[in-house]
Image (cartoon, rainbow, N blue to C red):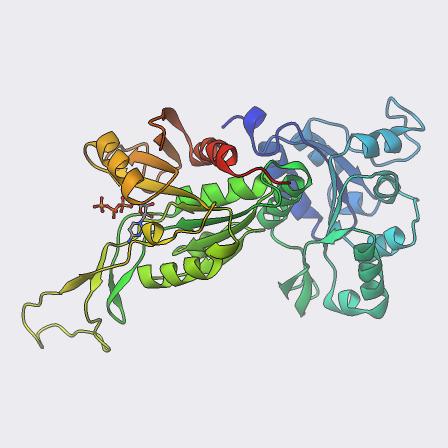
Length: 405
Ligand code: CTP
């Protein structure tokens, strides 16, 4: 995917960097924002420049960082106003205790606080400091004040701190910060804002005994991409997945194992959902009686496992107005099989893919899909990233959702 069509393409983000050892992570954040297609302007405090140089940021953004308030930036005297006006979002990462105090009091004595004061864009802060400083009454007072004024905090996370102590104060991982930026921009003006979308992902695991299961090759990547794309378009997303370890941030993740677990998690939440997108590879059968203890070799000789049928989750969900999207992973007669499933599952759309292809389907980062609808329509989507495929699927879902009043 080129940056021109990345999830943040066309978005202008001001990244404020204040003086903390975590400044080195701001480089990674910058790189990820740029790779996602955003135009990133850096505002730095003088202390931040002691940890990393403006030159490094300039190399990543191909833009001159804003550091010295008295340096003519082409638009001398108005640089901060220009920057503040252009921003779709301002992120301060790392945000030190001192930066939080300056913002809370409305000071404007460096480029970061100056821009934060001048902008009307959403303000996100990712704090980084020692745990004592974070829990100090002054910092907590400033946090509450800033939240009351609409600022959103990301973290801090718990963990090992530069001081050697362990506690709350670590900068949240760059990928999660970038996810929060994407989610926030989606909620501001995405076409799915206000919608709740349940996405299932991964292959279910049906227990044979406490250590073995019947499973399949689904990696959960397509479902994950749909969850991310729906989040980026402003939806509240519930991702019901068997591969929660790699789940995206700013998405509600429900970790499940078996088809029964997945069914329970979906039935519990589907009443409040606008769409259900079943990208999971749900096992059709499970062992009739999972052994309570590990089956030992030699004790029973050859064994056979009786399988009983699982519930068809998507077919069993019948909420009025719910847009149901099924998937058909096939190895032969792709379109004919998908058409049959579209009808039998009561879905509005079915996404068919040939899992025998090496560049599409299970485990890959790309997919080649065909979307079929109940009016006999067929959309062939050529090979593209799973995120881009997800966007195509969501375009169709958005058309089918009842108008929001
Ligand atoms: N599905 C489901 N519950 C099941 C099995 C499948 O909700 N017990 C959903 C899948 O998540 C997918 C769609 O139904 O969205 C089709 O899944 P697939 O396994 O291809 O279809 P099956 O109905 O199981 O048909 P078959 O295995 O015979 O191809």
